[in-house]
Length: 109
Image (cartoon, rainbow, N blue to C red; front, top):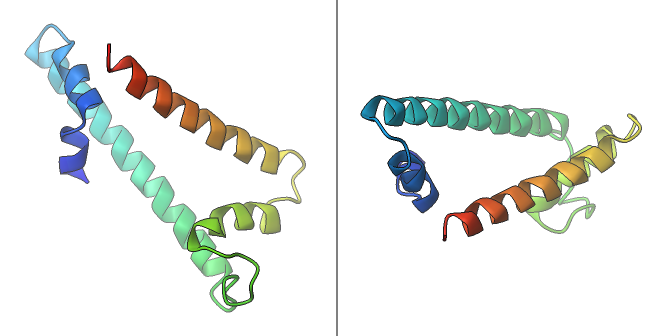
């Protein structure tokens, strides 16, 4: 994962855009902290979902068709008790997709 992060064109452009070597080091530090925090968040989300469905597999029960559908299924199954949370989840997914598309298209300039 580290090699993929450092070989990304957007990341290299971000490093080259700063004026000093110290600023480049700070960009590196903030990026590593962000990647580590995101990896921990994803790990713990997966751990919670695994613990929730340890005894019953939604895929074996036919509630989901692909393994990728476990997170949306979890949001609708367990977190739909909170009003507006499924909509917030969908908005976050769409926002992340738009952010990634915008970031990649701006790096082409």
